[in-house]
Length: 319
Picture (cartoon, one colour):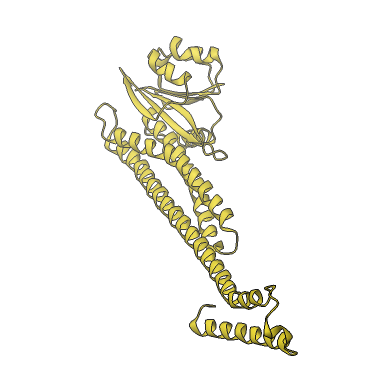
């Protein structure tokens, strides 16, 4: 589907006018949004806009790394939107020229809808839209980056909950959840870090035709990406700390179990020795004919066991 937004030189806004009815020279600038385009619609990138074949090829063959290419009077941006369900990246391509702005995406993007509505609102406001294609591109980028925050905030809440639940669940289950969170953080990092590098290149590029105000807007996006990167690194460190804490907790539990078993074994060792001695099948054993031998041996074993328990408790082995 292709939808268009055209702004005349007099400031009039025309919506959803077919591309073949638009003569670019008659308009101040236009925005054509290719959403889930068909092959016939994709051909218009060449036959109508005459974009470079390499840029068109990058649009068709997904998933490209976020980048910026220069083609004569057009800047070509490859951006990544974030799928909130899978945390996987989805490509969004932008063509920005002096009087044209084309967005191309194979999946429906909520961020593009929000950016479209914002630009339309600005164009119909009393102040009007003082910018053009570059500010429209900024709006799209800003919405894409803003959509990264909710997923990261959700992960941070999950980490806080994991931190508070330590000790009340099995270590294996907690470790499984921690590694799941680390995997999702890695997915976010693979999306956000390349976008941060791209925004840095945009800010320092001499080829992009933008004024100081537009660069200030892009600088704001770059600051958001820096914040996101710092949050991801902090969260990754937190998962590492949680992992080490859980492993340490598991080791302490195992040490406690082994300590308890060792104490029990130590108490029964002399008792087993006594039982072993009197369990030998020798004919000449004087104690076997003693009338009170059996209760006496049991008493000795009981006193010996109680004495060892009291001694171990005094030494602090049961703490």
